[in-house]
Image 1 (cartoon, rainbow over the protein chains, first blue to last red):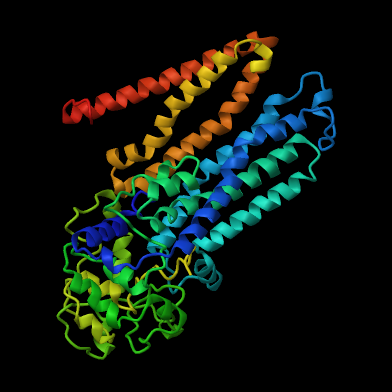
Image 2: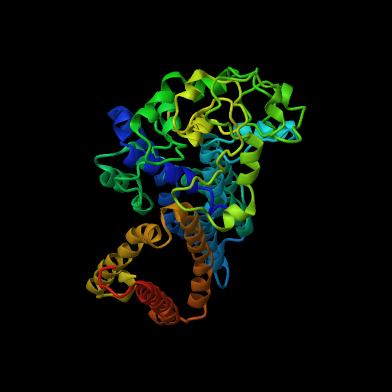
Length: 379
Length: 114
């Protein structure tokens, strides 16, 4: 599942940036921002990886004669439980790495907007999904880690330490560490290797982001630029098509903050995203997406047929798509084959040339740009 | 360790330098290798899985080492079993790397610079 998640945006983003040359559109990031990213990431990794490397200090203290944490002092026993004490440290270290298999899919799904709430989704789950952002993941990691260390100070025996300083701190560190790996290199273009070597002790996870693939997922660029360049179904689209929807498409921040200008849109989207739109459509699960736009005000040119959102969303989830991903030229979401009239949307939709782009850049589509949702390290 | 073994500080430093020089290649080249072998699209997933396996090894390697060290005996000689175990694992890792390189070269034709 997670092997499939990064496919679309990485491909489309790299294609749109390298092929259409839309990279100069992105404004430069200020050096103050870069310095903030650098030092915050450095501090976080020093707290996680740096602590893990230094567990020998703790172990030496726990095995010393003068320790007053563990009640049967390990030094006073006949054979000190060295292996068990070492397991406290390596459990933390191991969970810091191994938690990535849990945290990374969550990160990539948030990043690519793969988690949507359905009309049958319960309210608490919708709220939870709305809260699930990299920022909250990182902060919860800090909280879990701090709780682990706090409880470790009250622990009396080694298994207490295993649970607190090992398990809780390790899981918290994993939650803190893995969201850092993705966005940090995207803030540096010139001295990326130096910056990443400064940020990370292993510095390696950043290397595959070469000069040609700069995702800048979380970067504080104008969101409409990114969002319009992101979902290009035709990677070799001209830059004018990239810039055109950004002119009049509402920015994703505004579309998520305020109700998007499509309450008049037909209730054809049973799958919708937590933030945007008022709820009159949520009570009516549409039986068939093709039958829906009948109630829609026939909006301007239906030259680009709107992909019914439920269709695209459900076919996103078909296992056949996971089994064999399509070739690069073909967009992996379905091309809208039905010539249903597009819903009422901003007239900027007619500017676009490619169908997939139009579908994605629509503020009322089932997949609004996700960049506003990941308010991570970006203002 | 240098204090317990006495006059082998040079050996210790040489070991550190050589091991770090070797292991640095592993650490630095793993993501590039992932991106090349599995493709950039699979990068996050494969990297997560490899880090997961690394975490498993970190979790269970040290207790095994501690157990070996406890059963090893007194003094420096107690590290003998640990050294054998570690050396065996490193050899296995080397064999695995060579096997991966062989399998990669078998599919695409051998070149020294892949």
